[in-house]
Length: 153
Ligand SMILES: [Fe+2]
Picture 1 (cartoon, rainbow, N blue to C red):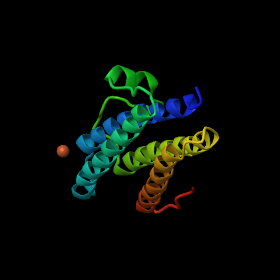
Picture 2 (picture 1 turned 180 degrees about the vertical axis):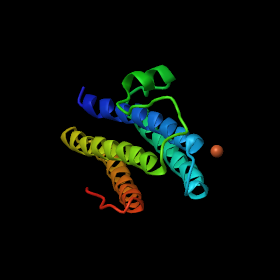
Picture 3 (picture 1 turned 60 degrees about the vertical axis):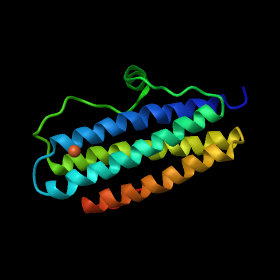
């Protein structure tokens, strides 16, 4: 099939975005410390954003003849974003660093998506990856700025 790799990476994004939404939800619940009143609602914003994106990616995958992962088991088996049971003892800096790691991984995945869709000539899927990459890089900038660091992109 001419778009096998495009379907594969769209589905990888479905698994990873679904998992990342869970990671953000955990962050929302377990955070404690200075900045809570700002970061706690911020996580809702991030989650809503991720959940909208996973829907866009999954529906594009269906549109080009694929079948998106749709069970917790499939997300867990296929995601490369790690998770661990929630604890209240992490600092806000550690939590932001953990989010940054997720956003960086995804921005890199989208870069691969851009290359693969170029090779398989699917400019619509490529556009989805490109706009997600642009938006995630902006979030990487903002989270890095919060830590007093350069985005390092
Ligand atoms: Fe909440």
